[in-house]
Image (cartoon, rainbow, N blue to C red; front, side, top):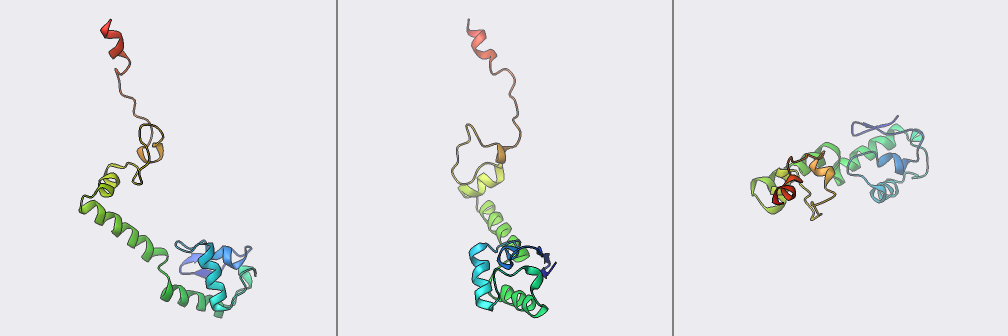
Length: 128
């Protein structure tokens, strides 16, 4: 397995698909990277030479923000939103959807498992 920027990329897949295993590298940027460096995107990653891997590493370091640096940048952006207490920051703090999704139903991914509130149905019964 070739090791690129501290990540083991799979041997048996084409180079452009193997590069997408890096955080911050998608299909389009992986294909652009291959053509910029003169690497065959369809060749298996196991056929990459040490020179090719070194060129990919240096190009990624210079041109793109990937892996640890990108994760750090995303976390800093979120913490900045929380500190300035803007709407998105408040949503991050409370663990609610940030991008305008509805929360009356369907926000289970962000809100977690249902927390049942006791006595909700009993309110109607007491009026009679």
